[in-house]
Every structure is written in C-alpha cells, then in structure tokens.
Amino acid sequence: MSTAPAIPARLRRSRYISWFGHMGAVYLFHDLYGYLMQMSPDIAEMIESFSDGVDTKETVAYYKDKLGDADPQQFVEILVGHAVLVDPKEEEIDGIWAYIPIHGKWNIWRRKDDRLTFWTAWGERPEQQILLDAAETAIWDAFDGAKRLIELRHHHDNDKIVSLVRKLVHSDVQALKLSMMPWSVYAKRPAMAPAYLASTMPYPSWKPGTPVPPAPDLTAYHQTSITHADEQFDHQETTLSHLLRIPHPALGGRTYGQKLADVMMARGMVREGTVRVLEVGAGLGYVAKDVIATLTEAGRTVEYTIVELSPVLAAAQQERVGKETAKWINGDVLAVDLPEASFDLILSNEMAGDLPARQLTRADLGLEPDQGNVNREKLATFSKIAADRGVNLDDAPEPFYLMTGAFELVEKIGKWLAPGGHAILTEFGDIAAWPKVSTHLDHPELSTHFGHLHQLAKGAGLTAKVEFVIDLLDFDREQKGLATTRSHFRALRALAAGAELDLPKIGYTPELLEKTVGDKLDLTRVGELRWDRIEDRLMGLVPHEFKALLIAR
Ligand SMILES: C[S@@+](CC[C@H](N)C(=O)[O-])C[C@H]1O[C@@H](n2cnc3c(N)ncnc32)[C@H](O)[C@@H]1O
Image 1: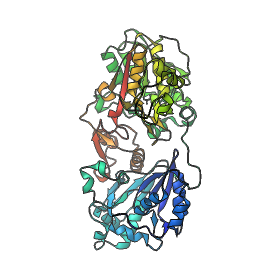
Image 2: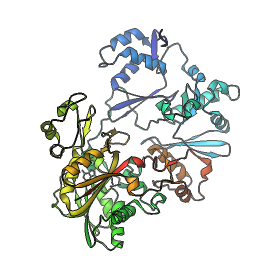
Image 3: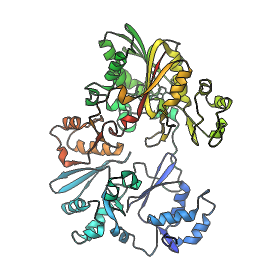
Image 4: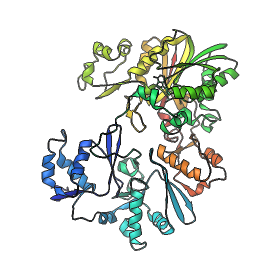
C-alpha cells in the first residue's frame, strides 16, 4: 500500500519561494517553512512552469525527457511534500499551524528590556536589523521547539503569530524554521535532523531562466579577484593562522607564527646561524612577521623570501613585514624559477588547497569501477610526478580529484630544500580522505589528501610525516572556541558596531571575547553565542581538520 499523499490534479507554484545561485548550483528557499533545496536549473524551470496553476499530469508528461535521467513525477511528489507546489485552491498560510517553530541555529540578537532585535548579514547582502515589539518578543520566547503554532493560538494574537513567522522564516532573515517534528526528537541525535533546520542561505539571488553564476578559475582568482587584502581574510577566506594571529590562550599566549617558530626550533628543524627561509603564499604576512621575529630573537640571521601570486596580498605583506626585512617574488609558485638546494626552511601555510587540481574518472587512469591498478602511462599524461613517485591511486572514488598542483609544489619543495633542510606544508585535509571541493566561499577550494603528498615526498627520497596541526602546535584542548559562520560573524560584528565596538576576526575564546567587548556590551543579553571545544570549532573552521606535512631532506 502506498503512503504517498495524493497529488492534486492541478498544482501551482507556492507564492513563498526565493531562488539563489552559487558556483553552478541553484537553491530554492521556502520563505514560509525555511526549507532549503539544492537543484539543477532545469528543475527550477519546471517548478516555475507551474506558475499560477497548471494540469499536473500534462506538465509531468511535458518534462518527461527534459530532466536527463530524472523522473519529473518523483520531483513533483517531493515538491508537493515540501509545499513548493500546492493545490491552487489551498490557502497556503493555513498550512503552517500544524508545524513547530524552531529557532534558527545561526541567529544574532540582542535583548533590551522586553524587546529583541535581530541582526542579519547574509553573505554579501547588506546588514539589517529586525526589531520585535514586546508582543512579538513574547511570541518568540514561546517558540520552544516543542509546541506547534496551533498551541500558541489561544495565548497570542493570531495575526501577529502569522506575520512574525512570515517575517522571521523569510530568506531575508532566516531566524526561524518550521518543523514537523519537535526538536527533542533530534536533540540527542542532531545528525538525524533534516539539514534545513540548521542550514542557512548566504548566496546571492538568482532568477530562473538566467545563467547560473559559474565558479571562477582558481589561479585567476588569486591573481585578479583579491582586491581588498584585509577583507579577504576577515570575511572571505579566513585561515587558522589568521584566527590565531594574536597571542592566543590555545597556544599558551603565543601567536600562530611564534608558536610555529618555537616548535620548529624545539624540534631541531632550524639550523644555527643564517637560515634561508622560503614562504609560499603568505596571506597578510602575519606568519612571516612572527616567524622572522622569533627566529631572530633566538639568535638566527634570517633571510626570508616570499613567493606570492596576489599583488594585493604581496603589498599587504610588505607593509606588515617591512620591505627591507624580506624579499618578494611575485607570481605563481609553480612557475617561478628558484635555484636548487637554496633554502633551509620552507613554509607553505594553508595555500596548497588553492593550487590547480584535475577532476578525473577511474577510467582515465585505466581503473575498473571497483578494482584494478593505475596505468602509470595514463597517469603520467595528467601528472608525471605522481606516476614517477609511485603515488597509489588505486582506491580512487568516482570521480576524483588529482592534486596536480600540490604534487608539483611538494616536488619543488624537495628540490629547493638544501640538504639538512626542513619544510612544513599545512592545509585542510586528511591522511586518507580523497580531496573534496568546498564551495561555501566565493571560490572553490579543495581539501588535501595528505597520504598522497606523503607518498610523493617519500618517493622523491625525502623524509616525511603527517601530523595534526593542533598536535604540532600543542593546542590547549581545554579551551573553548566561538562557533560562527561567515554571515553569523558579520551579523555579530554589525551588532557590536552598534555598541561602537570593532570586533576583529580572531579565534574567540570566552575570555578573549569578554576582553574585546569590555563594558561596551553585556554579553549575557546577546545570542546566539555557542562555544565548542576549540579543536572542533573555532569561528567557521574545524581546527582538527588541519594537517601538516613535515618534510626533511
Ligand atoms: C589561503 S591563503 C593562506 C595565506 C597564509 N599562508 C595564511 O596562513 O593565512 C593562500 C595564499 O597563497 C597565495 N597563493 C595562492 N595560489 C598561489 C600560487 N599559485 N603561487 C603563489 N601564491 C599563491 C594566495 O594569494 C594567499 O596569499
């Protein structure tokens, strides 16, 4: 017996749909429930074609062969289940009373007396404030994640409930989600909760029928798309080293650069006397500045060279480090010509994921769907280095990314290192996990398969090992870190600005945040501030996901 709901003979598109587009994907946001769905543009087109009401069967038949292998009937059933397509006779608002309002996960609000104000700053959209009056605040407080809207009907003005739900669920605000199930069902198993309950939509609007914004090419991105150095790291592309650029409790009061230098010296990775250091992709120059200072304080004479692709970032580095203190080579690290055996120490911090990679299928390497060995000749046409160094790719998923750029970098590092020299390459990734693309930034980024880099370095005759960055830097795991997303932190920053406070993007612990806000803001009246174990979450990053490849020649 089928339990699927009957599909009405005529359907129309909900009047509460907003569209968003980002890097080749489009997203539907249901402004009445908070549902979030990723789909291909042709399905978006089908949804739009239901407009004010059409015959369901005819429309399904029309789209029969127009969605690739996908079956339009199945989509229509899902879309009806999510109130994206509705019965034209139905009053859509009536549907919400059976649902349970659940506070969004990434809200920023401040409570003053009996009123709540929200701040939002989704993606690149302008910041806004949403002021609730006392009655609305009382309704918000009654949204306990357990009661259905209908249960609130007798205690609050019904029109106010509806208008508040509409306002707060809407993709402009995203402070509230409607759920069929109470939150208690998921409280002990958050992984079971439908994704939309904790998801947000920070991307730009998209209009069906118009081209979907494509992903920019990686190399071109760093050469030409970075126009504001500080903003790049504060908003777009925060790195762990950037969050820890201040003396930090998790590093025993040292900065990331200082601690890195301390550790390298303690491990005997830095020779006495003159040390020739190469840093690849130096961001805003904080690591360079602190490494140079720490090594110099320890009696080394430091000759520091930076290879940097972005002219804007190179200028920021020169300002921070001092033009006389280091030497700059502007350009792509994979294209520069440096003498062999000319560096004692090479650092590449959180940049390898920006290098080019190739998306391939198993067949491209002569592999069968779930067995076989890589054909080295075929592999050599994509990465001669991987083939020469014997990187094992037999377990490749389908499709997979070959980190051709990172391979070249490790090979070059091996050549540029002087005998007795050391290198540290850190990045987001894992020892055995294949590279995954993350698209939440304004450019695609790839996680690193450290096992491949490790094999490559060994194949090149180097000594190599992989460690967790949090172990390398001896993180104090007792610390707690503020959990944010980019938009969540932007909104918090907007709230703080209202109290004449500039909140820099640093890896906040509770003490650091209290120290920064001083008496300008009562943090007990501000939410949602969630504190996770620092290794699990620090701002938008997951510190334990960062690894380091340690190389010695
Ligand atoms: C994610 S940032 C990391 C910056 C810094 N190391 C840190 O830890 O914050 C990547 C850096 O590498 C630079 N970069 C990216 N691709 C590069 C390339 N092919 N050659 C040289 N530098 C590159 C970027 O411009 C940027 O400075």
